[in-house]
Length: 126
Image (cartoon, rainbow, N blue to C red; front, side, top):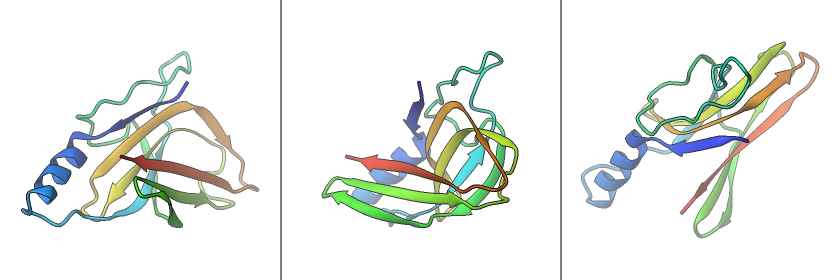
């Protein structure tokens, strides 16, 4: 079972943007890591207070996004061949223009072979 959370940093920015104090920074990339599971391989529930992944391996810009509805946006990022080859990815996050993690998702390890691409998606739903 995978686990996901919107970070406190994201929620603070949303409240301040709604009040007109700031402009909400846009989502620009994904962070990938291998620290999202415990010693038994079970996903660790991320907390809203988290500002970093358990063990970040790579940050990469998003491929793009798809507006699925008026209240749902899907962000996508592809790891190309050679990127994170032979790594077991167990956590991802989207980050904004400020570099802050906005949402974190953990899951059972996904092995990444060097001769394949992997597409990751995170939905932003209101």
